[in-house]
Amino acid sequence: MAAEVKIDCFAQKPFRLVKLSIVSPNMLVRTSSQNGDPKFECRGWKLFFTNEFECRNMTQTHIYNVFTSTWSTMEAVDDSLQEPNRHVFKTRYGKRIAYEYEDGEELPEIPRPEQPLECYGSTVYGDYLYTFGDLSISEEGGDRKFLCEIFRVHLKGMGHEYISRPVHQNSDRRFDYSVVVVQERVFFIGGQGFDQLVDLVELPVFSLESLAWTTVNTKPDRRGKSIQNYPEARVTPSCLVIDTPTGQEIVVAGGNGKFDNCTDIWALNLTTYEWRFINVIEQINLMIMRVAQSHPNCMYICGTTGHFEIYRMWLQIPRLETMCLEAISHYGLYKIPDADLLRFRVPPRFFEDLKK
Image (cartoon, rainbow, N blue to C red; front, top):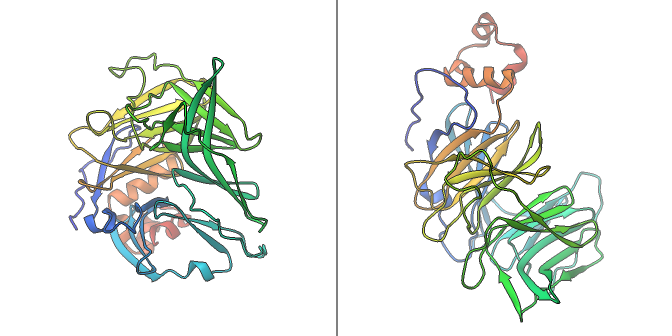
């Protein structure tokens, strides 16, 4: 594993992309048709890269500690089906969805679905686990009608059902999109039909509360920081949701465009529905970009095939306390004894984070 090289001067700047480390290819590359794409998530200062090997009934997790710039490995036999507080659902494409519930909440045995679940995206809302498959758009009397293979499982043990199915005739089929869930609304971002990619100007939205469809007509970036005012059409972009002073925003990163991989990053404000260009990852070519978020509004980026760098970008100016911890990490002060930390006037409440 290549060692991290840090710049001499510590500085925090929003929207600046910083390279953190290099990931070993065997953590991220699919090794057989039975393995899904690795799960990438962030918990505090740690990044988790998890592969689930169904053929070996094993889960392998590689952990990168952003604070100490060190790697560790966790590997265990997956006995999740026997865990009292976890239910696992297998999906049509070999992936798995795990639903975890709180201690003390007793759930009856959940019946297994008769057909495999789709897995373009999933979410838990109320007492249901929802998954989303192919989307179709049909024209009926001049009105557009959206249908999607939406499947839901009742988490209290009362069975499963289809909410809607796609129309197979006289409709525009869409697949390879990304699903973003904001409160009770599900946004369908990107994707492709049979002959072309779908633009990001008009977005289908499904309400988990009313089980009804609407559309959002987005607005262009009017500040002119990008050559184009809308994100390029793409399939399978990585997305996350952040809170900003002007409302929540959906951040869209990467994906595969018509001619090449997309390395740009955009944000859609959910109050004004206006796009905002953020940045382009220059001089590298991440074939499949995955993102994860830490609080407050720090985005981590990695490539899952071809290139294996990890990058970080602050989507807002971080809090002063966070900047202080980042400076301690940058200069390696976590390696010195607690007495010296006190002498440097490091607050004792930081020690727990420093010693993790």
